Image (tube, rainbow, N blue to C red; front, side, top):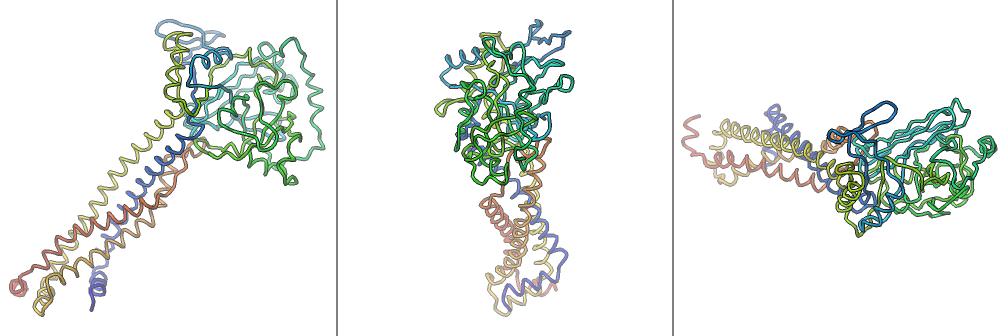
Length: 509
């Protein structure tokens, strides 16, 4: 009978204790392999994100906490109350001129658009999976139509959600309160008159083919957004800050949503020039984007699946006179986002007061989030390693007890001519069968562990943030390491059994 068959017989004779040892090894391997695979996945994703356009964005926002004071909001810096800071386009232009590490700025308010409903819903399409960073946005303060004011806010905050507040639509009889004609700062330049809303409503042709999608994720953006994220048009053109009038009232489709929007249009190029109704407002499709090579880097929704329309300021030519709670800047490929954030902070602090603003680079925010996850996983990896070590000790105890119980059979083997190495090899083969079976079972379960841990770490109110994946080389390394440790622990009782004194063993029996 060869060593493998004999080992299988010994294992079957002690099924329960063998199963417990195997399960302990499998549990330790599955948990350790899963956590280390996730750590590797995060580091790989961070390296990819570091080279993406999303990593080269910096957002400047007011650093102080707000406090309500009557009708006017105020902030507290030390013991001195001042009005909330509101940035202007001139502030952005001056900051760019004085900072070589930034080359442009943009606005972006992420929301959902309905192809039939009369109001929009702000949605959480913020930075990496909703925890901020890669999708920073600027919020404009605008005066609404008669019956109320509309103020939209969106930020790459710790929750990574974008939110908007729309009012006055129902009372004013204007479709889509957030798209009502602006007043005050949002009034058209040079005394131009906006067309009546009744005329705008006539542009919505009921005979237009209805899109196959009722709700589309998207954003209201300025022209600088496309340059910041290196988004180019495959068909038509993107929005431009220099566009005026009807030229600014266009919509740009992502590459994927363009293929899903109209069932009867097989060629995306034919979509250019078609009318699209979003939140009861008529837009002309001016372009279809080329595929975004970064896809969903740091975002819950890919740019490929979104629709982009102009901001209210861009649409009505009031961008120069608008004021913003946040300003988002893009850093060139040769620039340093961290350095740009420092220099922008210094510029705005000099303008509005020391400590008045905070500038945050998307890469730094993303790094902080990845670090938090890695710390959690590192703790879990330590616990998993302790579990695997405990399983190896249990295997050592199991093999020791088996050697003690089989002293007489081992002595008989030695007496009839079995060499020490034969006895040692027999015990090691038995340990290897248990150890390798446990390692293989643990590796088979580890993808499930990766999925569970990934959902626990990433799923939140705005969806999964960082995509997780199984790293096969890491799994293989953990499995091999577990088997090696098991054999090292089993080698001690195997060596003891191979060196039994035959006469003493037979006499004791």
